[in-house]
Amino acid sequence: MSPRRPIKLIIQIPCFNEEATLPGTIADLPTEIEGVDVIELLVIDDGSTDRTAQVARELGVHHIVSHDVNRGLARGFMTGLEASLRAGADIIVNTDADNQYQGSDIPKLVAPVLDGQADLVVGTRPLSNIETFSPIKKALQHIGTHAVRVLSGTDVRDATSGFRAFSREAALRLQVHGRFTYTLETIIQAGAEGLKLKAVPIGVNPQTRPSRLFKSSFAYVRRSIPTIVRSYARYRPLGFFGWLSAIPGVIGLVLVVRWFILRFVSDNDASRVPSLVGAAVCLLMAGQILALGFIADIQAAHRKTTSDVLVMLRRREFGTGPVSPATPKGHDGDAEDAERQIGDHERSA
Image (tube, rainbow, N blue to C red):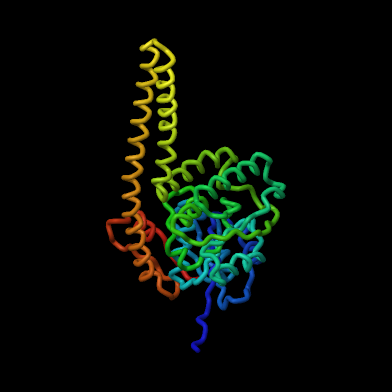
C-alpha cells in the first residue's frame, strides 16, 4: 500500500492597507489541522500604500503576491487562487484581513473538502446576531442569499461570506469576470458547473474597522444585482431568457383571452382590436427573447468548451512547486490575464 500523499492547505488573505489588522488576523489562524500536513499563508497585497507587505514578511508569511495598483477584491481573490495553485495547494481557504471571521473555524471549513463531501465550503455567519449589522442590512442579506440560493440551485446560507474553502479542482474551474466582488458569481458558477457546495456555521470576531467594500447596504445592493443577473445569464442563459420571455408571454396570453371574451360577448369590433394587436406584439416579443435564449445557450456550450480547455491549461501551468514570478503568456485570447501577470510580482517571503 502506497503512503498517503501530503495534503497542503494554503490560507490566502487579500489585503489593501491592512498593516494594522493583519497581525491579529494571522495570529488567529490555526497552525495545525487534523488531516492536513502542511499549512502555508499567502497574502495578496492589492496595491497597498502602507506597510502591508512588509508586515506580512515580518510575520513570516510564506508567500506574498503584490499588485502594482489596487485592482479590487475580485481581482485580488483570483490572483490568490492562481498563486495558491502554483504553490501546490490541495485546499485553499480564503479569509478577510480585517479578522472578521474566527480562524479557529477553519478546520470546520476544511473537513468537508478533506472528506470529499464538498468542492466549495462557504462559512455561514450568524447574520441575525451580528450587532454591527442594521436591521435593513440583515434583511437585505437574507433576501439576497435566498435569491442566489434559488438561482444557483445550491444550499448556500450566506452568499456574501468571504470565508470559504476550495478544493484544488474547484479552484481550477472557478473564474471571476466581474471586478466588484467574487462571492456571488462563484456560487452561481459552482451550481452551473455541478461543483458540490456545502454551508457550515462559523463565528465572527468583533468589528475592527468599517467595511471598505461599499458605503451603505443600498450601494451594495445596487452593485450586487447586476452581478447576480449577469452571472445567471452567463451560466444559465436558457433559464434567464426563459423567465424574461414569460413576462410579455403571460401578458400576451391574457390579451388573447380578453380578445376571445370580447369576440363572443361584445358586438363592437373596435373593442377587440387593441387586445388582438397587443397580444400579437407581446407574443412576438416573447418569441424573440426565447430565440435569444437559444442562441445564448449555444454560446454557453462553446463557453463551456473554452472553460474546459482553460482548466487543462491551468493543470499544466499550476503544477506543484513554489510561487514563482509571473510572466506574460503572450496569447491573444486573454489580454486582461496577460496584463495582470505583467503587473503582478509574486514573491516568496
